[in-house]
Image (cartoon, rainbow, N blue to C red; front, side):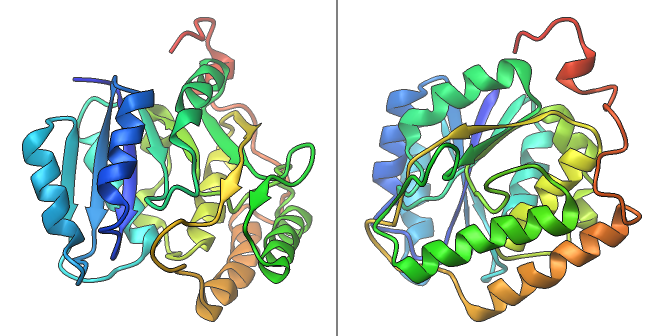
Length: 255
């Protein structure tokens, strides 16, 4: 079994799933893909089933109703941990995350436990976003950093690669957020548990097909989540120390 899994939540993504799988496997043929579909009314789940039947590297996890981004990733992580995958990616289905970057993430994972794709290292790398959305994203990153102390430029990024050890340590059943706050909550767990998180620059392009899932409730959830994380970390704005399972604690840093 390949040791790389790309987890992709879907809801009404029938225009994207076949093409995103094709491009991922073109750039990372050694990987496998898990689509987590929330019973999409547009038939996305059926398309994924046909894709899975044609290619054993493609898998489908079907859920009965729309449960949100966070729950989709938690289910995907649990699915991965039940198998032998060592590197688990988060990626959107809509091509806002470039699959050609996967090899760069894996290279960075040689010396990191979590690789976080940042839109804001050394400048802004966002295409086709309105100014208000860009300002919201940048403000969110600053807000998260000020309150939690996490030294990352893009804590809300949804393009990540986790080493297996990190997801084994994160208490997945205690993850409470479900929108984009999920990205903040999980990266905070990894950071405060003492795992090494590195950022690499990526270009983010607004989706080519379908519609955005952003909403007012998602923004409000993220605003409150950071305070909860600060309390969980006993008001500390730093990790507890280096995790003994971190790549930084091991002599052999080869993936």
